[in-house]
Every structure is written in C-alpha cells, then in structure tokens.
Image (cartoon, rainbow, N blue to C red; front, side, top):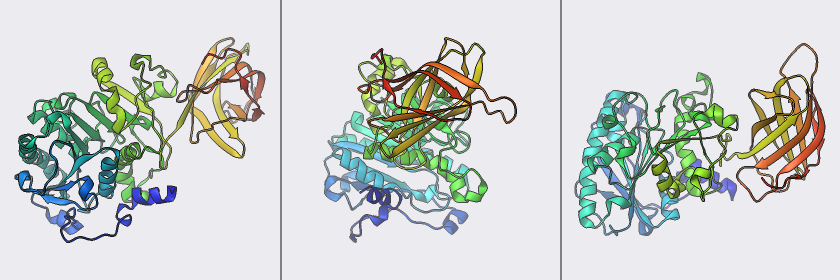
Length: 452
C-alpha cells in the first residue's frame, strides 16, 4: 500500500490508464518552445466527482458554456508557476485527486503553460498580472452562477502564488482562502503589497516556504507562514550542482510535496509559532496555549481550523523540521536535563529510542548546549520514527573536541516528553553519569512527577 502511494505521488500518470478523447490534457511543451518563447494563453481544466479522471476544457472567459457542474459547491483553483522546460508539473493530477477526495468540490487547474514556459523569467513574471486579469473574469462569472467568493480557495505555486494574490486584490480580499506554496522571490522580493501576495488578498492566507535562499520569498506573506526546516536546504535535496536539475528545483518543489502529504493525511506535521528556526531548535517555542483549546497549528490544508485564532494573533511565523522522504514527518520530544557538575559543561546530545527491534535517533547538534549545575537545560529532540511504547533509551554526550580530556556529564534527572501526544506519560532517568562519546542505555520509568 505504501509503495502504491509513493508511485502515485512521484509518478501520477502511472495511476490511471483510461483515455478519453473528450478529456483535456495539460499543455505539454518542449524546451525549444521555452527557448523561442511562448505567447500567453490560459485554459482551465475542470474536475468534479463525476469527472475525476477527466479534465473538462473550460474557457476562462465563458465558463457558463462548460459542461454542467454545481457552481454552488466549493471551488478550488490550482495555479502553477514558472515552467522553464515546458513540461507539465508532475504533481497536477495527484493534487486534483487528493483535493476531490478530501472534500466534495470543483477543482479547476489553471493551465498557463503558454506564458510560463520561457527561459525569459521576467516575461513569465510579467504574465502573472495578465493571468490574474483573465481569472478575474472567470470568477465574476462563477459568482453570477451562484458561487460564493468565500467558498473559493486559490492554491498558487511559486509565481502562481502571486497570481493568486493579484486575483484576491481584484476582489478586495473577499476570496475565502489563498494558499501560497513557496511564492516566487526573484522580481517580487522588496515589492509593495500591491505587487505581490499579502495577507489582505483573502479572508485567510497561509504560506509555505521551502527555498527562501534561492527561488522562494523570504519574508512572511500570509496570516501564517510555515518555514520547513527553516525555509532552506530541504533534507534529501542535492547540495551541489552535481545534482543537476534537482539541485535547482528540489527545495522549491518540496513545498508542493509537503502540501500533498497534508492532503493524504499520512501523518500530521505540527508547526510551532516562533521568531526564528534557531529558537525553535533550541526548544523555546513549544507552548501553544495561545491557540487553546486547539493544539499547535497543523501544516497544510487543515490549518484553516486555526483561522480565527491566527487572524486575531496577527502575522505568525511557524517552524518545523522534516525527514528526507515521504511522508516527511518528524516526531518531536522535549528533553530536560538537570546536571550536577560543579564545572560548566558545553556539549551535544544524541538520543536513541528503542521499541522492540525498532530504533530511532535524534542528534541535538545544531549548536553546543550549556549544562550548568542544578539548572535545567531544555532540548528539542526530533525523531524520524514514532515509538508508541519506548522500552529503552540510549544517551551519548560529546563535546566535539578532538584533543584534550574526555569529560563527564553528571545528570540528576533526565526527562523525555512527547510534544505531539500529550496522552503519553513523561519518561525519566535519575542519577546517571554520561561519559563523553560513550552510549549509556537504560530502561526509563514514568516520572515521579506525572504531570507533563
């Protein structure tokens, strides 16, 4: 089952083989089309529960002439971004199927490949306003047919996020929701709110950043802005030009695949409101009482349930870490260590959790932690696997020194608490000596103070 889901995510065309001459396909171009340039042409592909495997051609300037559909249903537009090679996005069909599967809605794929497929990026960026002009006409017609502006959701990828923003501004922010997936940075960074996506473009704007140091936009653009792994260098993406095309696009595209996982609900990715990724990694941003009775916000489609709290709170930045592979979820714990060393210690902690034959590891090494006598040190431990019943814990302390003496860290109490599952009791170990670079393994006990 899992491998089937992977094949759907990364090879969506493999999942269905039906052909129908009446089905409209996303425009497929070749690199030579991008090289010579393309003239803007927008077409819409309409998907419903009755035509899930078959996109119906829809004229954006005359949507009433389309095949019958229920205009009163929720309407979700998917707007792609820059297409320098001219090929269709690999994720288009997958996002359509997941959206219709999660809620009975109409999904419209906005195909502006002719206009986005060009090696002249400034031209593609210029075309975003023209696409918005065309879609303004489409949405106005939908309203006449019975669609409520508040029921419209625009999902924009890269340049498509700014297209969504321009559309939203045409309707004075009365569109229900805009989701921006790594909004494009080049030619938009530093621009005024009128020249890019901003929170006033819809009743609720959520944004996911995955490539802020290259193709994406760094600053917050929504009511909530999620920063995956700090917004840069996504795990599993090539770090050198030897990675070829993936080196250029992997971080940027990760936003789409993270959003797909939120639709598939393989696991929920919890994000933590915080001022910076470093503060998040330092464990300073784990308190979400401001959202009570809700927990911390969940990335993706279902973040809408936090809408009122986020609007009241004002622009919010939220951080989380991921694994390198689908479904990308990390499992987060807080580790509290009280030491009794008379001398101050600085070092790094590696934690292993054991559940039968399964093991998962967290390295807390983004910076050296400070261990001071009778002072509690709070650490954020993030694991690739979830352990329902932790049978053993292994801890290793190191200073990173190549030469010099081997130090010891004397621990009065070590406490481990799950952040995402508050029904699990906190686990403790009392009175343990950690010799540098030596794993100490023990069976934890439920903490004497059972309050988490």
